[in-house]
Image (tube, rainbow, N blue to C red):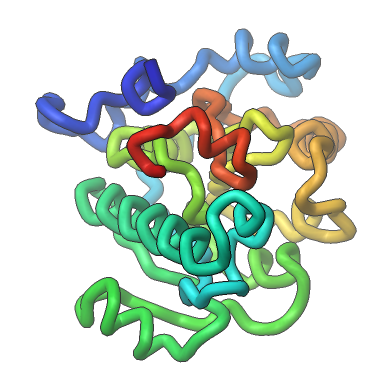
Length: 239
């Protein structure tokens, strides 16, 4: 059974409530112990209701420019088609959630994305710089995701948004050592500076930086991205 099937059934689901995230969100104590972190604060901070905006980081699905690690298995055209499908699935999940969203794009003019994903979709450019610099431009309160996690679901996005009512930061760890989602209700530039992106240490380094500042993040279930042929083998329906 795939991650999507185990965690969040996307068909036949019950009505959603934004703050009903107990089943999706790990208890803080368990998450902290699981990742080797002591709870920085014995009492979770209670915020006023937070309404974050979701930023989906995306590229124009041009052959040879996206999912390059999948080109040996799928070819340039196949890798681009897969990326376009994953991005469409991500946009669908965002539409079905209770979270307002936008596309933060690179590799093509915003109007091109609107033609593909709908004129009603808010689109803005990521800007220059490395991934950290581009993520740091997103204003709080916010959720940030990519477009290569096929298990992304409306329920998960609602859970992440609800978590920010109690925590300053929410993280969704990826099986490759990174994270597929980060959310924050205040500026956290220290999480994006001098980070070795696309390495297995991103998630643990992020936890370490938060612990240094006594910030206890909410932790979502671990999910898998699709970056390589081995990752894709777990999702035969996408091949």
